[in-house]
Image (cartoon, rainbow, N blue to C red):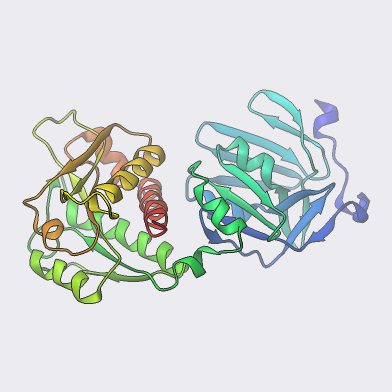
Length: 338
């Protein structure tokens, strides 16, 4: 253990060990910039640790205490030291592919090792000199980018309408002092920011707490000639033990085109994979106005049951809302390629 925690000062390192890496970092389809730049040691890419926080979201925690780097994510704990090749991964001591360091006042850690230990998929593309990271494990977009298409160029002329359910005098489901309309809006705003950053034109049927008619919501999407319509909701049930996600769609007999049903399958897949919850599947709902009246593939995403006390405690957290928005974002980006 003494050998593990004994570290050298940065000034004692051979600076030639590290070289500036002229690469791109792309996470879940979005470019991730770093003012401090990226480093390479023995062909291993090191990134500023704060960029990992931006990739993995609020549940990613890290501390730097002198030479000690602590990373917490879910049930994972990684402890490293600058200038030291070892990492304490849980209760196991492993050798890192590159030594953490400090560069331009930023703590730098080996990207692939950390990301993969936290459950992400990582790929290097020599063609476009980019490291691609998928926090959801979904890698279909890797090949698109490797062929030289960024997500921004692929989706530059696409329009998505996000519909935060309820609002104004219609609170939706209410449990305790939590109103569904507020949860719907919070997730929708996070989703909008993610899509806008990827070059998608986004319109929200409401951006604050106001009444918007069901037919008006559909009309907005139709007038914009939107490519996709996503209505964000949270569920309720007399069965207070019910939990999980479902996606609603308008049934169509034409299976030759990209339909609401196919869109719902993509959305449901990403919600289940990202939120790690019960899969209620996709459900046809021909009577719902926003699904019936819209002329583009449309879904209602039910993100969880407010009537389940344990699930509600998750639904109100920043961590859950970020993950829910990320799942919807990934699904939309996949659907726009169909």
